[in-house]
Length: 254
Image 1 (cartoon, rainbow, N blue to C red):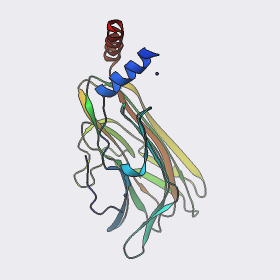
Image 2 (cartoon, rainbow, N blue to C red):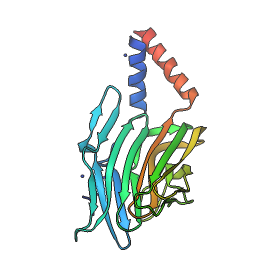
Image 3 (tube, helix red, strand yellow):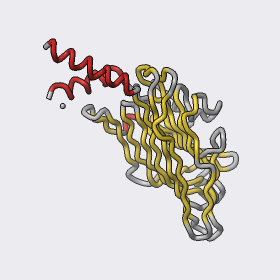
Image 4 (tube, rainbow, N blue to C red):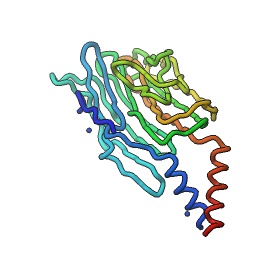
């Protein structure tokens, strides 16, 4: 379980049997800090942590959810406002799956935003399949045009990795990249622009026991950026078929 807080501000029988067997096979380990959202402007930065204890867990659907109720400023100790977090909705499912909606605004200077999920760990899945997608929109607020530039390893604003933490702010991403996309978005004065990226269901030819996602970009001063993202990993179809066969065998023995 992660405890990193330095510099942080917080089923008919068969269906039921299949669900219980799957839950036992793939059990996520939710860390204490679920997301870390950092705003950097020049030499100063502020990080807002999203704590697992803040959210609600539904054992029936095996999902953890949390939504930001009021805007939060990235306020430095001297009172400087580096930016604002105006929306943040998270849903983590133990399948495993990570979903995010966010909206931020930069401060008086161009701002770097680093929105990182913590490492979500689970029982190893051999040769799973995965899918990842993201969509982002920027809006100019001061008549000078707006620009978002991705800051991932290959210049993407969205990064989905497995078997390692994508959001390490010190050492950089340490996992295997499943998908990276959205290099840059440019909006004309007083207008909005958007872009999206998608990796459809793709086999992963190795054993996977963790996943993480990172949204990382530079945003021009005073402007707005919002987006959604989805990252999901599931056992290969053959493994799911074996699970159902095993469940049927257990029912026959009852």
